[in-house]
Length: 298
Image (spheres, rainbow, N blue to C red):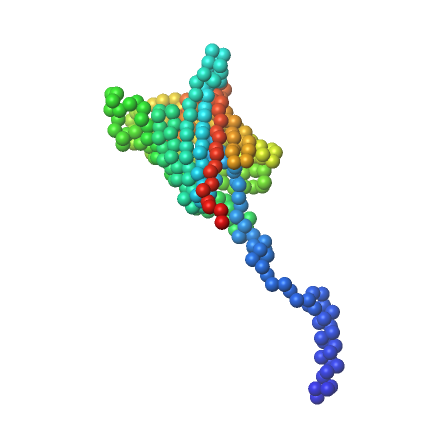
């Protein structure tokens, strides 16, 4: 019986050998092959090149054991005219230090000359955009600001409680292509003290901004912060609108900026913008950051 079946088995084996690819041994699947075949595993990097869009924080954070030194500088209003050299005679500045505790969590401290304000912050990556499953990156940003102006020796005396403001922001960003990235920033701010009883202690803001890359090392950035009407009634304020240019230079990111906001931290530019672009109330300035890596090389 077996001898009768041998010709048929031989013909079947020959047919299988003739099928494309079946006569070859498939190579073992490497970890790299698995990563390329599974787009869910590919994290999208460099949504933005700086931790600040202009005034608004971005989803970028310092890497683990990396320290960032940030200088934010704003000259006076262009509408001050030639007497003040179109704002160049006056200036406000903020210094900031941000440190990456992990690749997801960073902390920071800063000091701004506007109202002599100290700030402390924490930024945590809740989600990171991937090429497959996760369409956006989401960070939680918490900021505490403490103003020391006017001096406590002056009247009316303001206790530490009344000088403190809390800001919570959800940073939601997506890198649409190698050139275009956008970010939506819903913001909640709580003031322990407001100028008038008609003003709300807690208010909401919605920020939107983006980056468009025009060359290998240069990008255009802009941001707009919308505070719905009816939240601040005792004083005149306008929505913050800013634009600028990012220039990447090795370990530095240099930003030329134009804004109608004098302040550079959340409560200042969101609720304290007193000028309008159409009136020439534009503050020219720059942001510059330098990164120091403390990871030991193996």
